[in-house]
Length: 207
Length: 67
Image 1 (cartoon, rainbow over the protein chains, first blue to last red):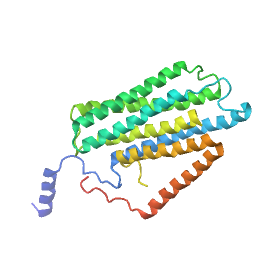
Image 2: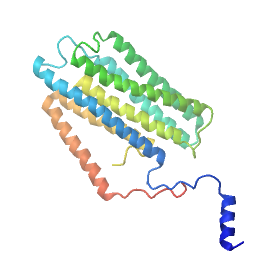
Image 3: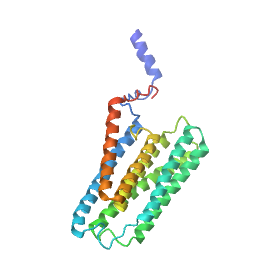
Image 4: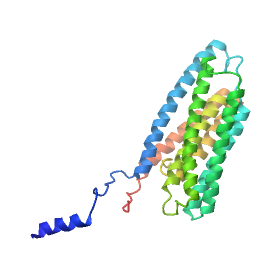
């Protein structure tokens, strides 16, 4: 057997499966995936904000003030909800820093608290929808209000699903200081949800 | 300014910056609408300046050889 054939045969014995992945990006593929996903989400929220501001500019000219007469925005309850969601970002960060330091109890407590705070936020929003006194078909203001807050609520629901998986995996001991990408990626998404709520709260409820 | 999507820590820092950014705009708008608009313009210009300054002066991290 020639030396080339030996080398090929030897290599064939050692390596099974597809060739190793070549990373052309400086960003890890999981982070790049989340980056592209969030970029698409920003465009989605951007389209909803465009509709909201268009409606606001047009109807402000018609009615003279915003929101239109007869509509009340529950800014106080939403403010409490904002504090809850911002707190959940702190607990999420606590969970991430805990696992980086090898503190599994901190990770578990942080993840559980983050999930519960997120759940509280979503339930409060659902209760607020029932009490708000108008529905999607009442005016364009109502439609854009429910559109923006509902879109964000859907993202919180997705985030809660991710957080639930992360929390279960935390309690099963799937993460370590060396392997905690599941916490890192989910944490980025949760912080994105938090940032989007701050934008929604300020523009829809306060300004 | 670091890319807020590179890590959880950077994303958390971005949350804090967002809170500060909007808190100042809301405080300004409570005084007067045009003060709020002014604060928005100044903060947005400052944020853009920070982003573009760091892009020209900061090289990206080398790829992870262990990946």
